[in-house]
Amino acid sequence: MVYQANSARYESMEYRRCGRSGLKLPAISLGLWHNFGDTTLLDNSRQLLQRAFDSGITHLDLANNYGPPPGSAEENFGRILREDFLPYRDELIISSKAGYTMWEGPYGDWGSRKYLISSLDQSLKRMGLEYVDIFYHHRPDPETPLEETMRALDTVVRQGKALYVGVSNYPAELAAQAIDILNDLGTPCLIHQPRYSMFERWVEGGLLDVLQEKGVGSIAFSPLAGGQLTDRYLDGIPADSRAASGSKFLNADQLTEDKLSKVRKLNAIAQRRGQKLSQMALAWVLRGDRVTSVLIGASKISQIDDAVGMLANRHFTAAELAEIEEILV
Ligand SMILES: NC(=O)c1ccc[n+]([C@@H]2O[C@H](COP(=O)([O-])OP(=O)(O)OC[C@H]3O[C@@H](n4cnc5c(N)ncnc54)[C@H](OP(=O)(O)O)[C@@H]3O)[C@@H](O)[C@H]2O)c1
Image (cartoon, rainbow, N blue to C red; front, side, top):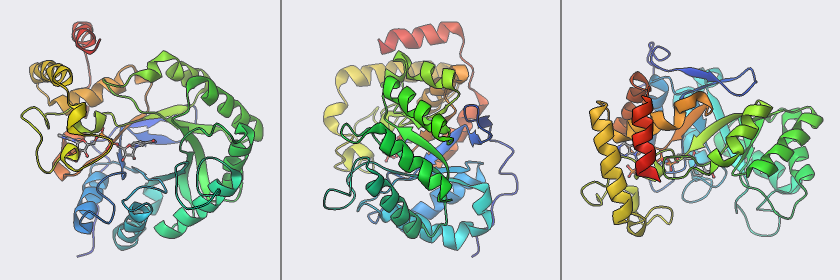
């Protein structure tokens, strides 16, 4: 059956200006890091994308290496895009990145002009796109001159292969330098993509100040700490969860008693607020309006519904924030 998007899709989402750019992003964006590779049923990936778009989630985040195997998330996304979303291409903000190991030899990793431009060409082919909306340098490269990496980002915009560019995982000072170089080149940095959640707060130590001062937006990845900031692990490790999947990014060792005790206390506050812990954790990242969008992952449609349901209750009292702070220290 031909997919027909929900006609009410723009009614429940909030769209927020990304820094001082002309682009607005949904308060919630969907990442395709997990659950879109060749080890996942294509039909589940399709349903997740349909539910996201039907809920007003217009921004989908990819990278060259998402899978497994690397590249397969872009390929599978490309197929679903062709089959379901082509009429909606201009309603979507699609991003990709390069910065981690992608192919053998010295040109398939890090931040050289050679790697970034070849990688974006490969990503466009896999997805069947003429351009991505945002292209990121995925992580800092300690060896390549920053100027070279930023020039490569400027080039892909001038070539029409990306509309905007951004950086990810750059510490505050390096991000400030990258933003200044891009401004000098005439291709402003749209956005920074850092990890940020109740359990991972490094951005509060300067990065958010830099971005605010320079008018650059931010999109917080892993706002649920990969599922730890949800009710998923309150009663053990479910067989269908990320922690049970053999992931090197989330495993049983990380779910320490200390962490679970914090999760239980946070869960009690969320219940008092009449929402799920996952919803409170997303609202918390969006508090203060310095984060443009929260970049979630999902393995089930209900998780997308939970995230969107958060928008109905985003406000925190000063007392609630103080109580949360005491748990997190
Ligand atoms: N730039 C970078 O270096 C970088 C790095 C990592 C991620 N990212 C981006 O960020 C995106 C999100 O990362 P993430 O997947 O780690 O984000 P996350 O939102 O912190 O974690 C998502 C996982 O949490 C669980 N979950 C979500 N909603 C839930 C709910 N309502 N109840 C219970 N469990 C729930 C699901 O895990 P289960 O599988 O257990 O159901 C889901 O896959 C990625 O797809 C990618 O686009 C970027």
